[in-house]
Length: 472
Image (tube, helix red, strand yellow):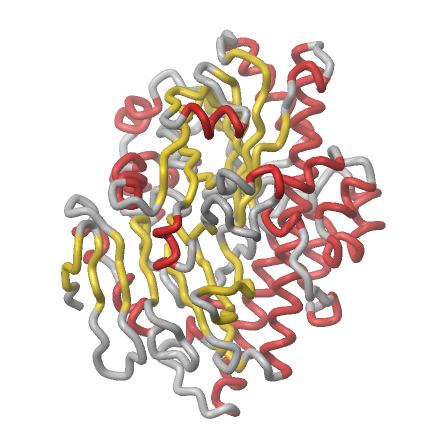
């Protein structure tokens, strides 16, 4: 499919065939070849065919082929349109949170290794692992999926002020466990407080560069600071919900006369029983994921206390912010109430926007953009210009190699050269090579794409000192 250049780092995907609206892709010339190599544009064109879709359907600089909507895709629909599980993603509310400390990032490697080991002792990593707080989390599970982070804070995980620094205050309204299958509930009840595998990770980082000192100061960030980034989602709970509704919405679409462009975009009218059920189930997974990251945060704080022997408050370990990457939410854009599907995309509200939490009303909330393992991560803020993208920006670097291709082509020597002196917890590189930095786009180029045209403003750049991941 052909793109038309309409301005710096902006390309139109023209409306053709059954498309109802145009697409918009953000990219630099360096990123364009990657976008053209997979089916991202075709998947954007498919999304542009769905009932109620609002112009434009968007591909972010990190866009790459996914299931249904591409990862790095944004799709907004009107109230008489459809909701699609494939436009939210398998890992509902996969997201990232940043903790700041009062510490300088000058730890020696034995101390970093001890921190990694203690965090791993408290937080299970890898596919299918069960949480270590099941006696508590099983008892409060129903409360968690309906009330999100407040439920686990009340159970002793974290601080009340954490809630003020989470997107949607850690709870998406409208959750109903009655819309969730028994299999999803079984998987979810066991996995609260776990990291998972795949691209999920925790990083101990050093703030390397401050770009905007005033905003960084308001976020509590300074050069040389030790920070912790946590990236995970709703685990098997959200995956099962997406699987269940992706299947059930295929016949539902047929009943409502919807011509599906692909099975990955199976959908139902938002106001139909099937659409309402998916939203209620999705909200459960959103709340689960916020709570999951909250429990992990409490365990990370415990690990720091144990290893460093300092009081938690003395070290800080305060929550800067927590953002969702895979979600559908009701928002107001251009005077219209829209259901915005973000799949591998991050909300980015500018200064003064009323949906910002009070702490960030005058700056815009922190936008957290993790890179790949071994490369940098960024803190940004959105600007008023991001309104053209429904106040959305990229969520990461974006893959350029599939997991299979990465495993086949990246050698141990290439992997170790890229990682340098960064510590990582898995000894056999073959268990990590599918997440090697070489499998991802250049995070600096990706972030530059929107910053150069004023949709975002760079605040800080962090580099990993130690990376914790789970085996698949």
